[in-house]
Length: 320
Image 1 (cartoon, rainbow, N blue to C red):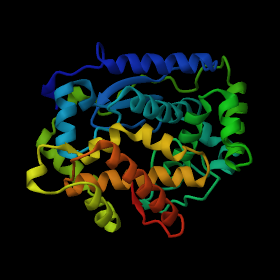
Image 2 (spheres, rainbow, N blue to C red; image 1 turned 180 degrees about the horizontal axis):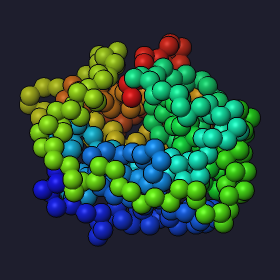
Image 3 (cartoon, rainbow, N blue to C red; image 1 turned 90 degrees about the vertical axis):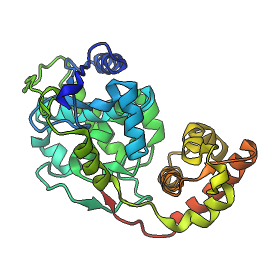
Image 4 (cartoon, one colour; image 1 turned 180 degrees about the vertical axis):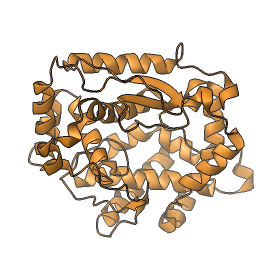
């Protein structure tokens, strides 16, 4: 990895980091996390900064990431900003040592709680905000705070309306009060340390992706297979067609608009079911062949039906 000669400066990622800094400045936070390239997304304990995965720094590496993992986490400006806002929550927590506060521990839990190998989210729970997929706020107290912070960065009127009547609103109001208290206050920790920067990583790409595949090979549920095969094709003669997973990802916003992207439990469940169905299309190597309008209409009806069924059953555990 160190031989790739990558740096953050001059890439589209630098523009995303600058936008994050402007968003924090608008919220009167006198601090912006430093960022560097590494092997994955993370914000280290005790370091108020953000590591960004190396593959986002070059188009060829993004294509390699997709070929190896069948996904590029943070691969668009919108997706990258969502993750940066989440990671900035971790960085702000580290910078001001918020996990030591009694209010933090009462609302989110103790930061010292060990990270589980997996978690079982509850789609109907209103105790958590929803920002990143897979109900990520439910995985650990620190992730709950980071997700809440990311939502708080939106306009106050937006999150107050979206989470009106939810217990999660108490967490958003806590973050709002703490950030108001810390306004114009320099951080307690201002280290510019970079943990595992790309310049010192000597792991080969082959070993890196072997480990990544083991980590992400969680297996999507096969309960959608029959319906997905009716909509899309797995025949050899269809291999020139567009990947069904890409077809759905590119039309994700249209699918939401057809169904109605709500903030209640139905809307949250829809996101997880949609992720699983796209992932299963990728694993089955299905192709989108035929009328795009008919495929989109058929998939929308299927998604509505499966989301309703999803809410009536217990979720499988999700690996971290």
